Length: 205
Length: 205
DNA sequence: ATACAGTTTAACCAAATGGTTAACAAAACT
DNA sequence: AGTTTTGTTAACCATTTGGTTAAACTGTAT
Image (cartoon, rainbow over all chains, first blue to last red; front, side):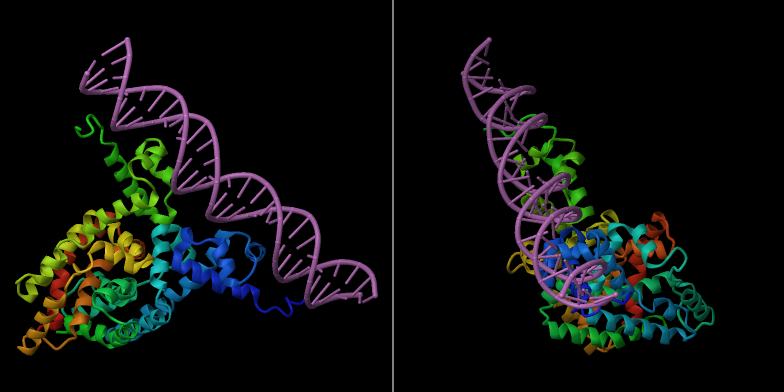
């Protein structure tokens, strides 16, 4: 009853290939044959390890989605003061996306395909991300007169938007601002400081 | 040689149906039969009016993309002072997207599928959107000491991100913040004021 | 009425695609 | 060794899907 002995890691090869194909072409556009080719093996093997296309996709997708919503709850719920929390959030997200630039597009695509089904898979029924604490913190700061009055929802949206959107719209930005890939990465690196400072300037009294 | 006489507007029906199906399922996920069903007619008619799937898609796509990049160049190049220009941009874009919420996702999806091909189709070879003037304006304001020093590229990215991303990530926001469709629309309406004021607070000295 | 062009449909076709199967190879086990 | 279990492949199958065709229908001009 030992686990598969030798094994060059066929299963891993499949997952890697599937990830590549699914993330670039999406579920509908991906072909099982493409994945088999990419993995350098027979198509039937995909079915041997992962029953069918749906199952394979779901496996890949869940693994990727975990990256996209990483320690989000931990950050939201932590005891850090507001400004620090913003810095942590922005910085960690950008780091993740610099390494996997296709991620936001892939995940958002799925969310759009079937929002309810999706959210349910990621967070279980009740493990929803709770921005509640963060929203409270914002209100507290406003009442204490330390930051300008702003609807917490808008602040949250602004932060998330500025952090994630450049990656979703990367081809657009790269093309229209005539950026090289290296330049783009540098700019994203800068944004880890730039966004928090932008936000803080906007709200600090 | 009169134009097609009668005509209940078959061509328009096809386009409307195709738009609906393509924008919700994407090019790869859309089925010609779906479109025919949606339009209430025989599949062959689609080919009669628009040779093949690619042509039909391109027709729909170009029409939609025009909405997404509407008067963008006019705004960028106008003589309005910086702060007003920001207000105009945000406000016009949000108006457009409130009416066609699927638009950003659809267009960005295509850009990702084939960035070069796409950009080429939208703006011709040279009709690229020129953020140059806007970027200059920003630099002028900085030199004049009226706004804090900030890289124009970041400012541009921030503005575009805050404006567009909430629509791309709508299902995510709606779900996690537990918003009704009506509430979402109200929030977007608020953002027409909120975003410019947020930006101005962030950069004004 | 008849002819005729443009329009619409049902039936059909070939290629693509997800999935299966039966045979074969390689370990693992006795 | 031989036998059983696991991994891998080529060939195959059924369905889906984009696209075609030939016939039928519609209106208009002759």
